[in-house]
Image (cartoon, rainbow, N blue to C red):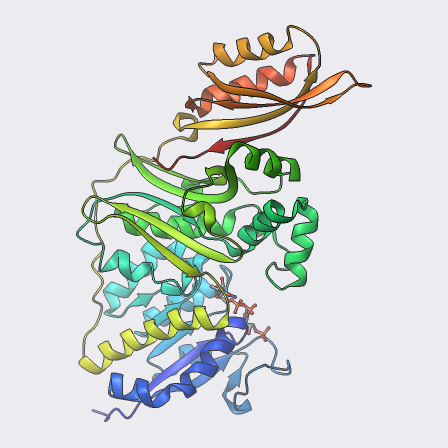
Length: 434
Ligand SMILES: NC(=O)c1ccc[n+]([C@@H]2O[C@H](COP(=O)([O-])OP(=O)(O)OC[C@H]3O[C@@H](n4cnc5c(N)ncnc54)[C@H](OP(=O)(O)O)[C@@H]3O)[C@@H](O)[C@H]2O)c1
């Protein structure tokens, strides 16, 4: 048998995160070698464009555009996948596992859509897939679910796990910007991509929530199981009214056990200003976890960026490399629950904020109250915000008590039909995190 001298890495991707990893591994080479027992060596680096200027210097003979140079190299022990997107990343991860290579990935989309199948292949092949960087960037959250929280029955997760939207919402709240202006600012600062759809429509947060819920509840929760709404409907005036009412607006990712079902949803929500999650601003992320033994714990930190994300990736690499040194194969035993059904969104209960423009005359409020009442929604408060004398309309804001989503959707349909309701400006769910 060949004597091992080092642990060889195939790095797939040399962008923001891959560049960070390629910078850190040599910088920390000696401390990691003493920790692991062998030096870590980047043997090949997969990119799309060999000629592209790079922020990090990598010997040009390491670069390749052919994934087979990594996948078919028997000397490569660990593949770090930081290409992103579903395809071809999923194929590469699967191929690497089938060749008996450990995989470390930051890919939320692949892990949300294919994680359980990839983990099963890894187990069969006696290797690991580690994915700490896929949720919350540098925030340790996957490992705590696998290790430190594993004695708990997890009852709820409330999270802010998309830095781009949190930056935009913070700008809208603090500087009275409209959505479009805040998005442009996020783009200019590099916090939003040229095509921001995945972030602003909530898909990125839904991928991350699927990963967390699967770990927390011990059963597969797919992105398709998660009700997902983005932040594009929010207007500057929603933030103004939220503030006046003592709330702030965040894109929340919620997964909780309710009456033997799993409720999983991503959408903007009013959060009372006093809540810790309401104070998470800018590109920061926070994940609030509730367990039957530990109570409530909060994980907070930088959810993206080259160095925070590399921190999570390199930690995963050290873990698999240490296992290779110790001759240990796949160690991951997932929690297995009995399998709870996914709660349909129509059964979810929350409170609601409702903003609309109505005719400014007697009897209109009674009509609205009656429509809400028919759908079992009771009004907690109703405030007239602005009147338009020439149009003879007024803007009103209604806060409801706890109501069922099905009733709210039906009421919204009825309200849209009323000739006295000129416009439903917005409706936003209100979360107390109780
Ligand atoms: N950016 C963050 O802060 C962050 C945080 C947490 C997780 N992540 C995750 O980390 C992953 C990477 O993100 P990133 O921001 O580093 O992306 P990025 O800057 O766009 O880099 C992607 C890299 O992959 C290479 N690549 C893409 N498609 C390829 C293909 N088909 N074949 C070969 N190479 C290909 C690109 O090559 P070229 O350079 O030649 O174009 C580039 O080097 C994603 O899964 C992302 O969700 C990112």
